[in-house]
Image (cartoon, rainbow, N blue to C red; front, side, top):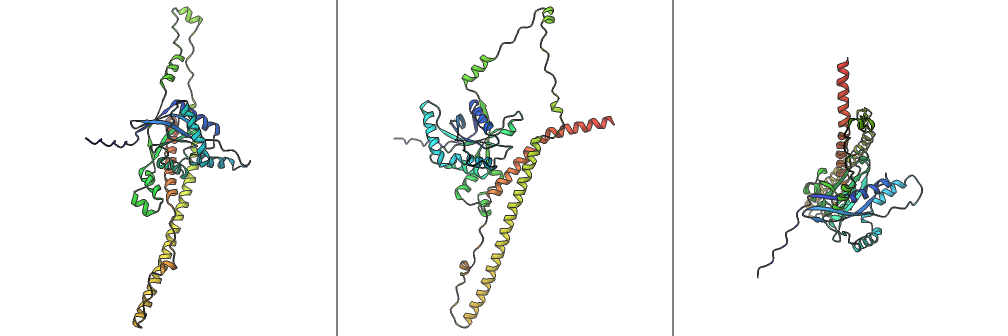
Amino acid sequence: MVDKAAAPEPGPLKSVRVDALVALKIIKHASGAFPSIVTGQLLGLEVDGCLQITHSFPFPAVEPTATNDLYDSSASSAAILAPRSKANAWYQAEMMKCLREINVDSNVVGWYQSTNLGNFITKELVENQFYYQSSTQLNERTVTLVYDAARSTQGALSLRAFRLTPQLMAAMKEGKFTTESLVKIGLTYKDLLQELPLSIQNSHLVTSLLHQLSSPPEPLPPFASSVRQNPLPPPLFPNFDSLDLSIDPFLEKNCDLLLDSIETHYTELNNAQYHQRQLAREQAKITAWQQKRKAENLARAAAKQPPLPEDEWQKLFKLPQEPSRLEALLNSRQIEHYAKQVDGFTAAVTAKMFAVNGGLAKTE
């Protein structure tokens, strides 16, 4: 008998396709709780390397514990931890059971999160996605959708799909983010997240409905007299808002966030330098102690006495533990993301400034 060939391993995910109804649900959920962060579950299936997201449901809202100014931040912190919270495990199981009974796709394909001006590259997001990609109970081939409510108000939908890279997955499984381990794995701030191409598609029923809702064009009047009696509607008036030279408020907020991230980067840099100084100080003490012990052993050997152990320094001295470099990597990636956003915001303003400068030079 011929042995059955082993099933080939599935290749990497190539793209993500989101149903339009799912996108509308995410937008409504995030807009209703803005500026707080919201999270939810994504359901669907995978077809030939394309992850099709066909349904979603939000995680339970966080109830206020006290009426204070810190409620928004505490609610956002609790919301970002909801995907792997044990308190929501029963809710997720019951929700998926109900959806399965009405013939809705109940395969978990990831989770979604809202953000404000691209401030989403955090340790919580990495831990949540690691929980999904490494869990044996969930599907490993999962993604996280990030919806930027502030960017979407400018007229372009900001919905992106991310996965953790194999290098970051290996570092998370090892649980070490020291300089030596990062060099060994080859992990840099550019290798943290992998963005997948995302497309939004309507179902055939929705497409048919949209075609039926479109009204047929009105026929042109046959005679000129009818044109005078019923004139055609005038064309749209020109929009001069695009010529406004005022600085975009989103650009100002982005610059503030960029400065905060740079300050955080310097804080992490100072912590790393402090660790290096502490390590050098302790190593100097250990070297001095070893030299002193060798001199004592030489003197005892000359006196025909047994030598003292030379490894006692391990009990007397304790090397400082190197701080985790994960926060520094995430902050570096966040700085790069803010810089790209600032570049995108200033592109239109710079073109207007060059146009105004050229016009003023001609008038002088």
